[in-house]
Length: 495
Image (cartoon, rainbow, N blue to C red):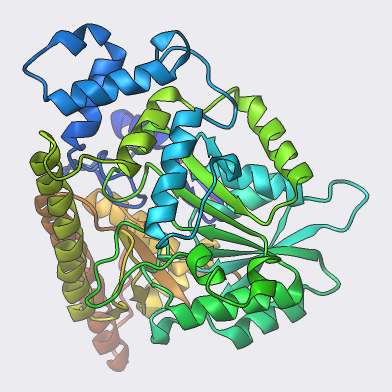
């Protein structure tokens, strides 16, 4: 499923249109709108798949062609499962073995700041964990509507999630010309606008940024923590792309680490929930659906309700829990699988960094497109200054201009690219591109995008020349309104 301004676009329905001839494309459809690296052709980590294969088929424990550390890790994990089988249930908050692995990873990542398995909850992906917390914040009927401060732009799945939970999204704008920085004065502005409209309970942060690729430094993190403390807000911190920082001389710093290096009254009182997932850049096991949240300074009674709400899922997929365990405790130097693992993860990180630089250069060379450099994450989020003709046609169709641009791009070039988020801000058109794809796929995407965009720019230039000649009638582009299946009427298309 794909989200376009809060509405889900069914790719299956779109494929049906192709088969029926409603949309005739001569090119293979390429989707870089959302972060699904393996779906785009990136290869999985061999160690993860080998251990998973042994766990699913324990007879392979006797297969000597498999590395010894693969078989030992599989045996260790199977012994942690009831019945020594991946097919058994686990506790709703996850296998104790995996929660311990996560706690050890966090402690090491944060330079010794302790993490405890009892404060960690494993879920069917980070989105599921976030939904549990959001529903706990929601006041329900008869109470003022709960509000959450959210960055603009934000992950494309966040707004539908808040809407489903009945929670109001209160946007705070990131500063694009300052590498999408979080501005303290903007947080206060958003806070002021929320008064009388909702009861503000939390602030959502994405670091590294999705889809902007920004990375917060220590000073910015401290300012956000102090703001949350002053306003008594729960900090919800999405740190899913913490393994994908590639900007020179920059590194990921967790909110928890910064919090525990601040004054004692802050580290003892600020409530924080951080999220991570196997959908991260290096593992990229999006379909295995497993993530976790670590809660800090949360009341024990509330933690009980978190566990209770996770019970509705019974437990996260055990294969996903296995992937989490392997992602956070990978082979060590000297292990038989280490060299292959190190080569594969290095290749993924190098591909991401090189793709981001390649795409950034091309986008900034195109007329009417400007893009801030990303520091981490797997997206670029370029700004569009679209021709007047596109703006006018979009207005006629009741669409945002970047939505129409993306629909035309799909129709003419077979590219699925995400549109921007507006939230009432006029003249702010953007695209969302996932750049963690095979290099040859990226080159094909950039070639099609450039060709399409330059055709639009050329038509606009021709129109301006014709408009200057009063003896000639204006020529329109003859743009065709694509037929897409959308749930909801906001875009003006029929369901």
